[in-house]
Length: 182
Image (cartoon, rainbow, N blue to C red):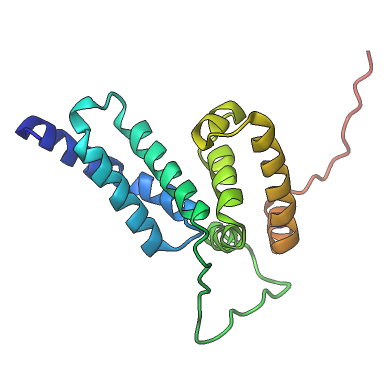
C-alpha cells in the first residue's frame, strides 16, 4: 500500500470505526470483544484491497455481515455471560431512559440466533430494504421476510420487557381520534 492509500485508510478508520463498531456490537449480540474482533478482521481484509475499493464503508460493512454469516454457519457454541449477581428487576415507579432501552435491546438481541440477529440489524438498524438484505445474506427476499417475522415474534416472546418499555416511552393521548368522513 502506498503512502497516499495508507493515509486514506487511516483517515477512514479514524472517522468511521465507531459507527462500524456499533454495527458489529449489534451483530455479535452485544459482545464487545467479539465485535472488536469482527471489525478488526474486516478492516484487515479491506486494507489489503484498499486501492481497489470504490465505497469503503459499504465494502467494510459487507465484510462484517459476511463474517457474521460465516460465524453462525460454523455453529460455534453460544457462550453464556456469567455475572456475580443477577440483575435487579424493574419496579413499577421506574422511568425508562434511553440507556435502559438500549441495554434491554442489546440483551434481547443476544438471545436471538446469529442469523435472526443479523437480519434484524440489517433491516431495522441499518434500515436496508428486504432486497438488499437478501443480496447481502445470499438468500431470497421471501427468506428475509420469514426470518424477520420469526425473529420479531421470538424477540417478543424472549423479551416481553421490550413491550413494556415501548409502551412507557410512547406519549399518552388525552384526546379521542377524529374520524374523517368523505
